[in-house]
Image (cartoon, rainbow, N blue to C red; front, side):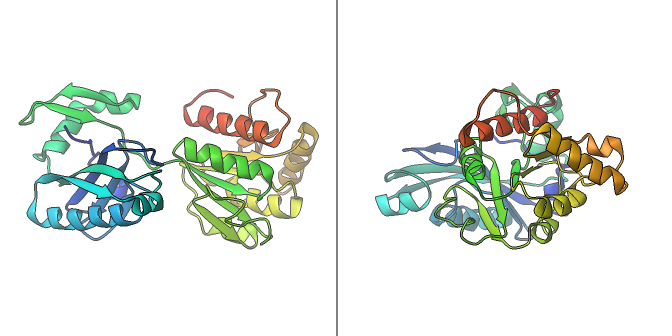
Amino acid sequence: MSGLIRPDDPQLRGERAIALATLISATGSTSKKVGAKMMVGESGRIVGGVTIGGCIDAQVIEAADELIETGGRRVLKISLDDDEAWEIGLTCGGTVEVLVERVEPNNPHDRVVRAHAAAAEVLEKGEAATIEVPVEDGRVFVDRIAPPTTLLIVGAGQIAMSLTRFARELDMRSIVIDGRERYATRERFPDADEIQVGMPSELVARIPATPNVAAILVAHDYKYELPVLRLLLRSPVGYLGLLGSKKRGAAVRDILRDEGFADDELARLHTPIGLDIGGKSSAEVALSIIAEVVAVRSGKRV
């Protein structure tokens, strides 16, 4: 069994060889699900993680570096005491197993690359499956690997707090941005992957705008929102939403239209933000937003 790597994956560009690590079992409750993956390139590049960091990922990287040199694959079985487990998101001590294997993305004879040719239909559907392929053991577990959706949240209010909790449950990354130090704190956002304090437009400009980014503006303040919208409306972000009423959304669109933004560009802006589920509380609004992000990511019309 093997996790599938696409040889044309942009994350692997320029790498002659990589090590693919897959979390295949874990006792206890963990913030990463079985199937979580990390890729370590020959150049030292690291993408993803099998845990939230700490001793396990460090051991996996060490094994990955070794396998890139020697070839083959191995299963790491790592036992943890309670303190070590707590640091990586397990509620108590236990054992995790990680499969690490060497892959040559540009080698058509590599067993994983050969599996890719047989699994094109599975990848296109975006679903995992076990299929028969022409490799030595005859069966390969095929999984579509793509960067996680990143919630880029501008505004560190109550809605943002709920959004980071939902993001954690859905295996999304979350970045919270706000200009107010008392709002954007680790105490308020224990589930956020990153917290950045400063002028939102300047911080947003430093974050790569890719189709895997869902930008969510919940600051409800024109001086923060308009500069960010000017940056993102012509970027390739996969989702762009603005908190507010229909009247407020129309006013924002009018301002941007007067500045030269075309109607097809403005049509990318989801406002009022979120699916209409009838909710009123901060958590319910956050739920409607995350539901809309998932719907857009899945290609549903909203």
